Amino acid sequence: MLRVRAAVALAAALIAGLGCHREPEGVATVRFWAFGREGEEVRALVPEFERTHPHIRVDVQQIPWTAAHEKLLTAFVGRVTPDAAQMGNTWIPELAALGALAPLDARLAATTAVPRDDYFAGVWDGNVVDGVTWGLPWYVDTRLLFYRTDLVAKTGLPWPPRSWPAWRRVMERIREQVGADGYAILLPIDEWTQPVVFGLQNGATLLDAAGARGRFRDPRFRRAMGFYLDLYKSNMAPPLDRSGLANLYQQFAEGWYAMVITGPWNLSEFARRVPAAQQGLWATAPLPPPEEGMPYPGASVALGASMVIFRGAKHPDAAWQWLQFLSAPAQQARFYELAGDLPARRSAWELTDLATDPKARPFLVQLGNAVPVPKVPEWERIATRVADRAEQGARGGRPLDEVLAGLDADADRILEKRRWMLSRQQRSGG
Image (cartoon, rainbow, N blue to C red; front, side):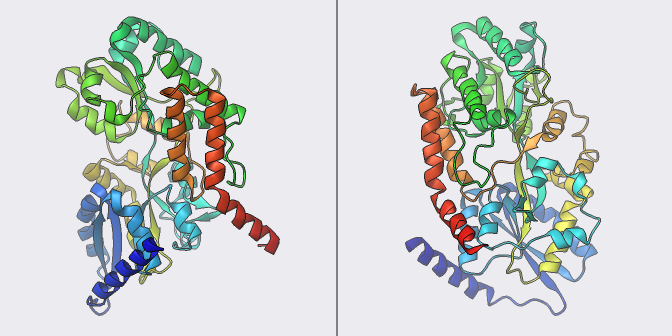
């Protein structure tokens, strides 16, 4: 209740501030919220949009990522949401369930400017909840391998691997070569993405069909978590969280570890932080599937940010024109140049150096098999528990079955209200 009262008070202050603003006659001002660096860089695209749309102005408000989620909820409670906003695609189920977002299907059906088949299927699917499209992908994110080419080459084994066993053999050979002074792979134990990725690769659903109970004891996820935890048990990976790392880039350059599963932001970070003399000694590769003969690459998570229109938008039609503008391949390519974010549209990759860059192209391949996480409002809380329980197994020595049973119990507890709501809907025939 205290949080709700605080949200309402803040919303009232926002309303008071907005009351002082008057739009020029005949001009619609689109209020657009964007987060982190994207909120700064997207301003560079506004002048061209306003030049080609003289009756629309765009007011960009930059918000830190750390405050974004709370601010969105606060604005919804106080009924002062912007017209449109950037949104992490794992937040969409929550805001859609609250009734905060406007559906986009009718708008999409009325235009050929946003062709669905030009987007990565898994990323697009992450914006669809209960058959309704709530968000438009803006930029994309997934996970794959960054690795030391020289250390991998010394193993003499095929690379990139086409199965978990083949990958494991490469890691074992690297561990033999580096001895007690290094590791084959870095998997920070406070990250949920790695065990979830392995589970998705093995066909695990993580939750049941209704998204109402955990399915982490499913044999498919059990095998995935077992593969993950054994990398620590066999000293292939150090049992460290991100705060326990001295310097990820320096330790990579020193050969303390040979590979790491990470995301596209590290393309620029590795290029900037790995010494110039070693820039030729790192590369990227898609993730292998569990078994030889399965589709390559193995699955990875479909993440990134989308753009949404709020149900309470003052200028929804103008907001949609702004979103279409940001979605155009030329603007997607321009935004990549500004912010370094991977474009959501395949055609935009051809307008940049991404499609031919040997270190970026594996992301294009990996995004072709990217899978959304469960589309429930509670997912981020469940993901935190995945990391916590995995850490208990990796660093605390908890047995695998105990880790999985605890994770199912965590998920079931978090999803209790969802089950209650679903049961009410069934009883009422809704």
